[in-house]
Length: 289
Image: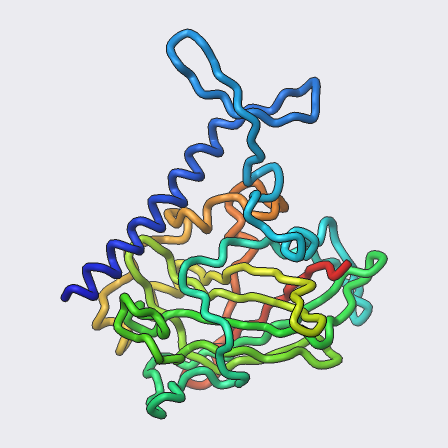
């Protein structure tokens, strides 16, 4: 009971901080005669102007150099079919990323006890591309991490959720020459204050140094979320409480400035029915230089 209360308290604090950030950003004014961006703080009849760089018009100050340079502006062309792809927006990492998870394609099991998470099967295919002179080039040697909740909205490896030492529904793969990685998992559940989502992170290293880091989240259609949660074991947790459009991360601008609002719309993963589960495929377009 105490752990559940503490977990909810931490989640509420995190969601509140993001909401406050969004509210602050909506107060930003842009001076059309200069390139400066200023925040106005109204105090009675006087305005005090403070310098600030908002999410919707630039990078958050917290992004590292390797994260800032990872976002691809504009579009690139796939050589295979001449399709044009836009740079994929970055979103916040969230509080539950844990590094050094297992290198594996099937992330349903927990290596600490061999148990397997119950849920509707979901096969995910990620195609990672680098933008090079307007061409979408498959990125080889990139480490792709994903992590998400189980059917009841619980993350592994989180002390407040009573899952410290667990690693279910976490793992990474390294892209080959085709820039593709695949994961076998289950459809994620929901937790208070957030819509249903999956976290993804792409990194490249030079020895122990991280020279590229790109982070975002994936979403599903509201109708799919509702459909899944009418089935066991999801129905035990009840229907989702937050739709995509009500989610503060989904509806905000991307943290890299590529999208000024509703960045989650560019991160929807459409699913195809396959046997008893689903297959989802998505492109990640970023920039390594």
